[in-house]
Length: 175
Length: 270
Image 1 (cartoon, one colour):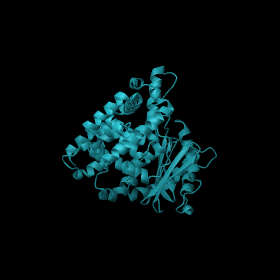
Image 2 (tube, chains in turn purple, orange):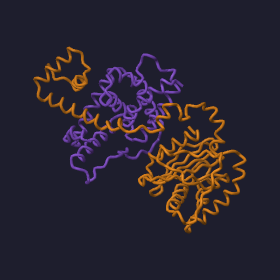
Image 3 (cartoon, rainbow over the protein chains, first blue to last red):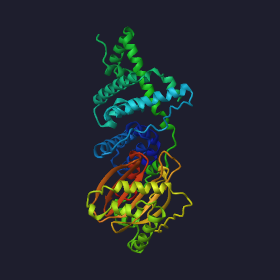
Image 4 (cartoon, rainbow over the protein chains, first blue to last red):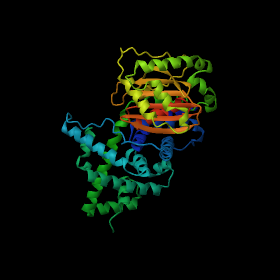
């Protein structure tokens, strides 16, 4: 086991968890996914190519495991968890609005096809360039570009239909 | 110039266009109010999306992930060696099980009377669930029986005289603390004429509720995980390499499935 790989893994864990949370829609399932990715990365550390981005490599492992799970598991999924989401009446109106907006965004994301979801999470959420996202997703840059466009327009349509965009991003940031 | 496509506009907003293309989009935005509006809502949706997942970055890292990153989760260990040790790790050695077979019968009897309210007891429930006549097909009564036992177990008071059996030192007790589940106690059972254990885990989180884990020897072939519902109780059951496993709880199938995965790792059944 390479110590440096472990160190890099720990450094990238928060981002991997965010990526996995977006993919799975579940905090518990996301952490399972990240754990499996860590284990796979450590067992295949020799396959990591020096000079390439470690985070992109890890994003690819997370995505690969997730897609494998989607294909192989016959999970009777219930509604994706929306942990911590509580639009109870005790909350101040502005905060409740923000929570609702963010919940709508997560719900809208969860409705997108898997590959579009991944593209959005890599580029729009994590800030990878198209080239880096393409490496992480193991697809050409043009594919990332078209997936992103379809994902962004579909997300926008869902948010507009649900009223999510009427709640401002500023409200969401109050969260 | 025709209006830029969404793909070009989004690439422009993401800073991914070449200079000439960028200048063309910028020029189009200056002239086209509708395009500016489209650009604004696309940008706003991106901000919302980032905000929706920002909180994850600020959450404390679960210990199990740090351990996994350090290679301490055990899964990357030599699997061949792990398989050789599986029997001892999971169910203890042969001498222990021979010694507890009689105790299991007695415990099963005690459970039937200690908890029972006129219904089938734990031993009956488990035996019926894994009855030899069921072959490779799960008995129809399995989820209801196990769910019934689960309900009685959960509703037991601390002072109603029911005691737990002491775990032997060589028994590998699954650690479910990462799921917020604390081991409460175990009872010996007979399943398919083989000794087994019912492990009860509790949690302060009422939304998740207690979880019951059953570990048994099994003469039947491996079988993938089956899902059952019995009222508000969800049950998962699978067999692997001479062992039968089951999980019951009121938590969602999704949550139980993840515990199932964790257990499978700990029992080396993946």
